[in-house]
Structures are given as C-alpha cells and as structure tokens.
Length: 272
Image 1 (cartoon, rainbow, N blue to C red):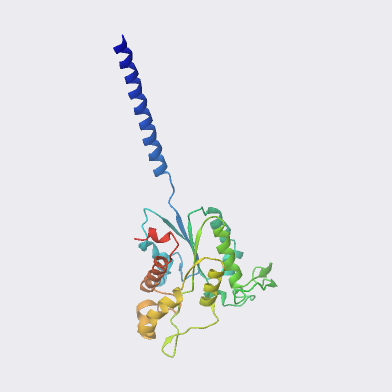
Image 2 (image 1 turned 90 degrees about the horizontal axis):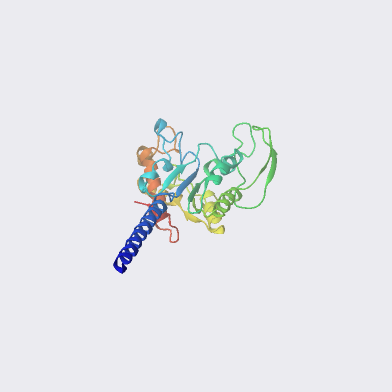
C-alpha cells in the first residue's frame, strides 16, 4: 500500500515538473520572439534621401544605403528624410509628429539638416529658411506660400526640439553636420566658420546628443582628390549638391565611423 502511494506521488511530481518546465520554455520563447527590434529613424533633406530613395537620376542620399552597414535581423531602419526640406519645414509641414508618435524607448534617431535652412525665410518660391545660428530669437511672418501666420525660429531651436522630444521618449539621438558639396576654394572644400556644421555641433553638445561631423569627415576625403575627381567619382552630372551612389556610400561610411567612435551609444552594437 505504501509503495503504491509513493509511486502515485512520484508520478504527480514528475507531471508537475514537466508542466512547469514546459511553461517556462513557452514563456521564454514568447519573451524572445515577441521582443520588438529597435528602429533607427532618419530625418533630413535630399542629401539623406533623394527622391524615393531608389537612385532616380543617379541621385542617392546616404540614408538610402546606410542599411548595408547594419544587421537587419537586429534593427529596423526608417528613412523619413525628404528633399527640399529644412529643419523648419520638416516640422511645419507636420512630418515630425507622426514619427515622434511611433518612437519607443530604445529606438535611435539621426538628424541632418542645414542645406535648405540657408534660404529665404519668406518668399513666393520656397519660404523654407530658418534664422541662422542657435539662438532663441524668432520672427513672425505671414507665409507668402502657405498663406498662414507662422513663427519662425533659429536652426538651433528646431534641432533642439527634435533632440529633446525624442530623448523624452527614451530615444538615443545623433546629430550630423550637413554633407559637404563639391565646392572648392584655394584647392580645398570650402569651409565657413560661422555656418551649419558648427551650429550642428553646438546644438548637439548643448542638448547632450551624439554628434557626427559628417561635413568635415567627407570634406577631408574630397580635399585629397580635388574638384574634378570628386565630381566624376561622387556627384551627379546635374549639380554639385547631390551625390551618386558612390558618394552616398562614402557619406554612409563616415556616418558609420562616427557611430563606432561614439563612446556611450548602444547603436554601434547593431552594426555589422
């Protein structure tokens, strides 16, 4: 009789152990498989994404090729850059809010504006400029294109807004200085002391975001080649602003290098 009871208890215990083991296996499986991959969001202008990002007219932005540098099994990349936009109009057209709403803690954001900020604040052609610098000054306008009243801020104000709103959601933010164009002066790519690359660095540092000096990194490569070789290798025949695929890949390589050299960001662990 005692042997029979002991056998039944042992059978029940074994059955419970198996059930518990199966439960933890299933729990571990779902915990692993249902954990979403982080997303790297890109915002900027046509030098980050030209057209639809598929090389129309041989124009490529670096954001359309940087996916080659990442392990797609571990991270998603969404390139929301769009041609012709400045730090101001990307916001005023309502493009930022939907992206911000999608962001989750653990995601990443790379920002690169500047080229289109250096335009008129109010005219009948583009009306896309921002106030130069990183100050808190602003100007009120009646936009000649949209026919709406608008308060226009500085380049630094807009970049700060993107940084701080993304960081508030637990997103790790990078700011890139704008890509250099094929514009030479005295045998070197033209630099300007008071210009967007400097302001991009300042606003990143002031808001404790990561900074990649893409402008200087790629300009140093151009310096060694000269205008003609840079034009034939890296730019489209159309202009000295938009890169071909090789030029986009060079800029993407420098963005990648900047990520690798960032001490505190987790983004580097998703690189190949």
